[in-house]
Length: 119
Image 1 (tube, rainbow, N blue to C red):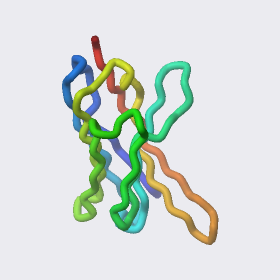
Image 2 (cartoon, one colour):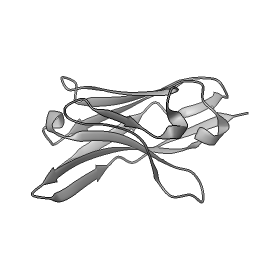
Image 3 (cartoon, rainbow, N blue to C red):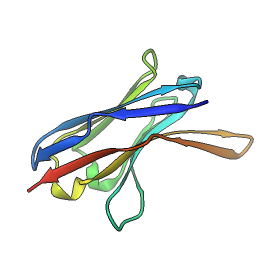
């Protein structure tokens, strides 16, 4: 079965950087879209960034210019480089793998990693 394991979260001061990693197994990694979502306390989970199997990338407006998503298909890993972090970036960050088969979307999630940005 699909497993997604995130790492790289932690506590950082505002203006600092963190790099999240998500290692995937149990699926043909290269054919799936990969994304990062986050959920802050009391808020809904929101998309942060997504990268398709073809390399197309989209970011939430709130992170454009500060975050960079990338993937290494040889290592079955997706990354999220987060720079110029702000306190409002504090959340649990989740790795997502998804694919669409016959118009049905299949989503898989990691366990989440906490990112805390202090002011």
